[in-house]
Length: 299
Image (cartoon, rainbow, N blue to C red; front, side, top):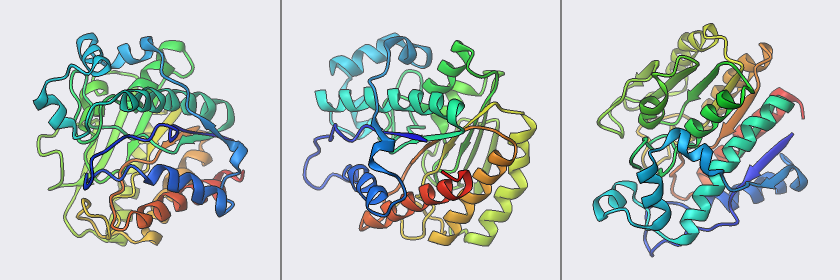
């Protein structure tokens, strides 16, 4: 199995910034240290191709991001200060999503130790998301004929409004999003299937609701699942508002991945959101997702 990382590009952030950029390096180090992944299974994410970006995003928006000419309002909406390193990081994360999708189709499972940028729309970014990795990967897969149908299972605690905006009118993509009903973003774009959960939802209620709604994804008969395995439903997450435990998140991952593997559907993963304090709690949850993937796919 092959996995990808873009953590060679460390986004420069001002002191006190709320985005936990160091979690990516911490995750790679923990996966190797705990024996979940071997170091030689983790590859540098390549930079995205311009054609792939253009399938999902407006040309004038791409140019403004790359040139650093987004206006102040657009930059504030994203929440990350522009830099050349940020541009390189974005390119690598988008390229990693494409590579993970291709590797999953070849090997059955792949993933990127980054990604899940589901708030990026065609012509603007938001919520730390600039370009949309799953939209870029899904449209690449379909354009190249690698698969005929792609499903997104988005279990980040925040609704994937960018995924919905870019992809839900596409007949060969199915977007399923599970989120806190009162959480960001406050303006929702309907997915093919949305599941809203009340604040404080705990393991059992979450898992029952997920199990009830997952069959709709498989009724679509996808050839590839892009799995946004955000860990911000964790009770300790600063931005989550749900109350899942580590065990609940692991059961969530096992449910999704087992259902995919039993049907022979390849899975490409992204880590999604995680904002616990200290951030090591989120890193533990991310590593648990990969441990469950290793168990289910037996690599």
